Image 1 (spheres, rainbow, N blue to C red):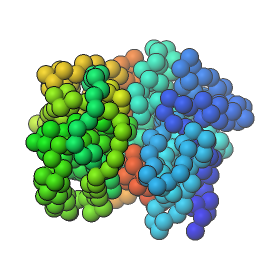
Image 2 (cartoon, rainbow, N blue to C red):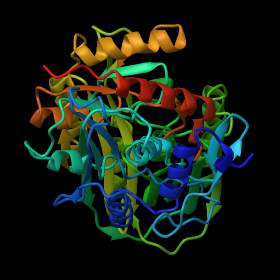
Image 3 (cartoon, one colour):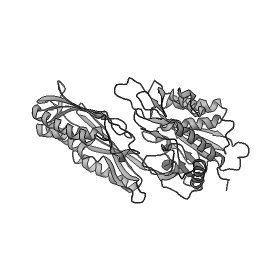
Image 4 (cartoon, one colour):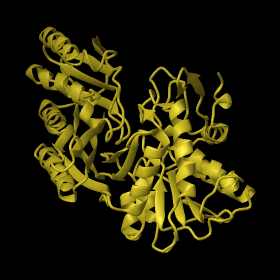
Length: 480
């Protein structure tokens, strides 16, 4: 079946149109223009603010004028990840979608269902003539995935809604009422290059699942940078000298691939020990990472290296950096309170950069993780900088919209939803800082493998989500 034949046709039509427009984070010019023209073509008041957020307003349908005004919100940008063997340019090409049984996927890349299905849903409501709703503002933010700069730039008074519905959750039986905050932690240094000694090696880690560094961080998936670091640490016995490292990508994606080039003075001893470690690691991850591949091979390189002592500092820094769950929430069972993702390691021409995203639903714990990383990095001679800090979203479980949505879910689907807080970073916390009286909730269809080329959207879940969304809109509470 073609995706164009799927129900609800309105959402899949708009999602396909959106996915034809390149929309990498921080390069959203084309999709901003697309959404702006969409609103203007419908004859609806459409504005673009100074950073690129698009707001489209639509008056209440007949009989809904006395309901509380709402904000429907999703972000325009998407995580751009692809398999190594796929030739694809996210800045010029549209996503290639296809139906795979009960799911919609993309060919070798992220699908953009996060948060494209939310955007497509709002588009479908804006263009509809038969869906009941109160006065609404459609808020399309930019750069959610790499800094939340769109939400951070929103100013008090831009929005008039009393309830915000964020359509960016990835399990259709969940109603999210809180989320983690985050901060970028970047370590860097520059070292002098020298002639390398001994045999040159390349180690490549690939085939890991990757995934969302918030929603998947507790699942024990392999982090390519940390696995690579274990081999480099092993190489210290052989006077290893680093030449280059290229591991991971975006801060909010668990690294799937990493490769390092280095020299070792005793190649046969290193190979023997490395093969033993390779066997151990493959056994460790045999259940979770069935496609993990570790390639270790001798190679030739004329590139200069970093001396042993400086290489040791980098290797110690990579291995000392905490990765994964830092603390579980003592209040909410099963919720990760704090974590870190060692997201990107790049060494080139003697310059090292290690990028991390530290998350926590508790502000003090967020900084505890960040400062622990700073301690380990600076103990090894790397400068550490913090950036892109954003607050978490504190739950308000007694909000009227939460009770309404819980009751509607039970009526529609015959079971109670999971009312939860999540470890992902949602824009609600940032928006709430400027609109503290606004009630907020996040929900969405089931999306698996977000932030990786395995991303997929469940077809039946989109149908369920569409029905639920329409029911919420027509039951929005009366104005106070």
